[in-house]
Length: 92
Image (cartoon, rainbow, N blue to C red; front, top):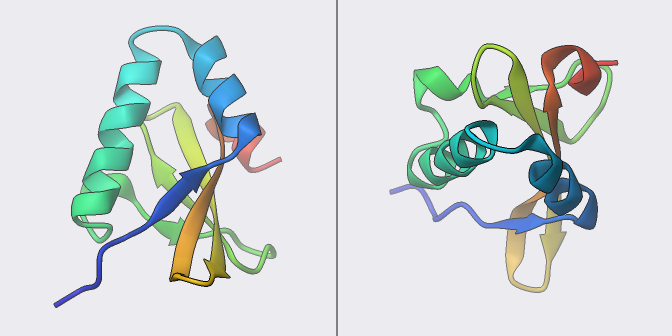
């Protein structure tokens, strides 16, 4: 059994999500719910960021990605939700 996925939103993510508007903000929330349920779901495309150790992305839709950073605290491992941005901005 896979342990539950823990996440914590960063201030940057909260600000970026607020700027997106609908429907992307709602799709962002949906992608994060799916990530918590099953990070290996094919539609999320959960993958490591090349040349940036400890960072991962998940897909919101064809154009937007959520950036995650793997961290650990006193309760164990978690993912910091770093940002949500367009595909090109995420990887630049």
